[in-house]
Length: 352
Image: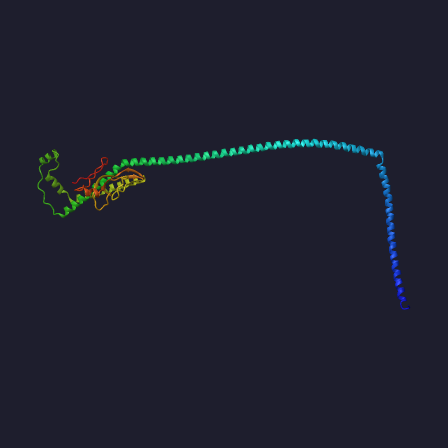
């Protein structure tokens, strides 16, 4: 018992201190609650005063009458406002209908404007097409006129050249005859130089004999002609041959220039010699038998032909090789002589 006593007293002291602290806290909380209750009491009292004042205000007949009047005014204003709203709604309906009509009218106007724009665009495109076709037609017509004028000029040049072809034939014939004559005279001159000198000629005929021969138109007597031929000197004959050769060279230049002028108009000779016979280009005037040439080939050209592009100005007159006909015939026909064209003027040098 003596051993446990001091601890029980200590616990009692601790418990007493704890209980004292608890009561102190409880006292403080009670005081705070009391203060809160006092504040609430004061607030309730002030609220009761306010409630009484509000009740007096609400129960005041004049105030309620004013409120009723105000409410009546508000109700009247609300009814007036509703009527205004109804009128405004009707006006808005009318405006919406007018807008709908305007929209339909605007749509129709837009559709008409688009249709008009399409018509204008179509008309413009049609006009542009017409103008383009007209320009193309004018260009084609101008080109056709130019081509036609060029064709007419070419045809006129061809006709003019065809009229001048006999002149070219004459020049070529003169060249051919002149060259043959010149070769013949040179051959005779060479033979004369190779032969011994002739004896002196006898005395010629008298004056009266020469006069009688001249009047009768028989030319020089045979003896006198021989003496005149033998009297020509080699120097004089050489000068004459040189002059003839120069003349032939001049004719060759004229022929070359003539062919160059024809070439400017696209006029060229037709190739015929040793070529197959073409009835579109050649005109057969004679036949001959040449074993060295194929049957149907052109043996010789009697008169040259000329063409202007695809147009034949004059057919080439030719001699055609006919081996089959020559084999059937006995004896074979000889080559026909070359005819002299009636419209071709030419120069022929006779043998002196």
